[in-house]
Length: 220
View 1 (cartoon, rainbow, N blue to C red):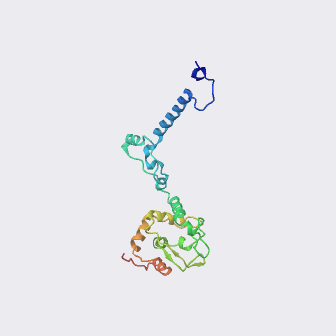
View 2: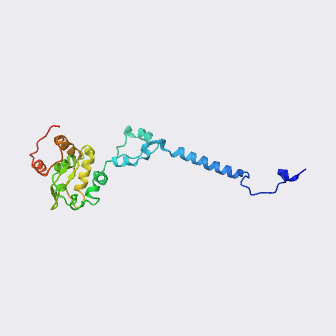
View 3: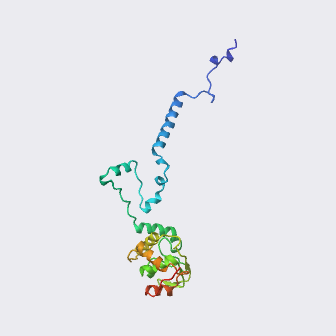
């Protein structure tokens, strides 16, 4: 009998085709089982609101598992109210997303191109006029902080909600040395309703009439 062909007589070898040790298979199986258990426990039910942090800026806060049951067992069964929105924080976020490209993150604008909002008499002035500018846009020439600008600011009335516009105005009027009063959502809504039919961007003369109470309501 040829012993070289007998598997029991073959010498040890380091060939990668050797069988994987059972201990390694058991260990790897435990790791896989633990990973599956962790995923099933913390996947959040594949709910988008578990992973979407943008809702936090609108006053939404994540609900911990079982909180619905705790709410039902709470005295009176009343649901907790969502956290109030900080208008300055919301305004800062919306300003950086929609306005900072022109007026710059520091509110200083760009010389000869985009007027500053820091130290601007238009920002610190009549809130209704400022709301009208953001809603309907503005066509230069306009003088801001002693310098003249002749560009055009686009209208935001079809882009931003009254809440977001009010938050932006509040942020502007309370930042970079500005100390004007905040602007509420209802104020912006009222300006939108009264002046929503205005055609084209505002001009300085029209804004002065608006501030003086001469502007009339125009139909759509």
